[in-house]
Length: 295
Image (cartoon, rainbow, N blue to C red; front, side, top):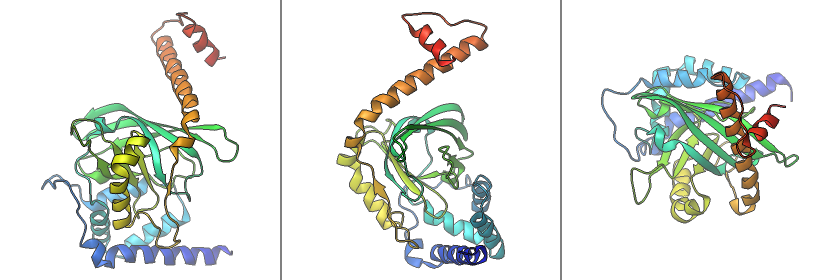
């Protein structure tokens, strides 16, 4: 397809998608699903949206979106996009997000790997700022090998749009941000049970869960209802739908992930000891194991 025709199609698609967000009164009438709005703490939507776009990978489509935003009332566009997205999330506790996650639902247009787990590890935190690393393990569909990806998550303020997360994928167009979290049914102080992460136009969207079996029994119907009701499940332009991960077929892969994570942690500890001026010690074979990692 000639590049000029492709560019025209991209421009038409962008205009159509923005029109869906700006004109659809039924969607905008259900723009808040839960949480508590705190007056006087919000960052202007246009500033959050600009931050999001600045962290996206450069592409012809992104350039057209930036130009299109500038041609209309940017503040109005950003406000309506934000209201349409944040329907079920309040202030987020970063500590409740740390730990291991399993990808339960994903977008097949972006994600070709299987059996995906992600670790969130807190790096720094203050009242309205936090940073954490993301370490992602997955199985390549092409050859069955294990892929490890590293990303970063940052919280820039109290608003949901102020938390942006990258997973380190080469084809990741923009950072993700949370639009819904699952609280524990028994203890509100426990870590979140699931996360719904998306991007500015609800595409792509992924759902992470703490425990696949628990999610399927207690939370899946709730999440599917949310994704369907608020337009995340099906792409209105291509008709493609999100897919589910069958973790009963992934249990064997987890053993490899756990070994890799253990080796990575030992390697990090070894580096820290070197930086402190220490040496590797042989303690039941672990020191020898670390030495092999550097050979």
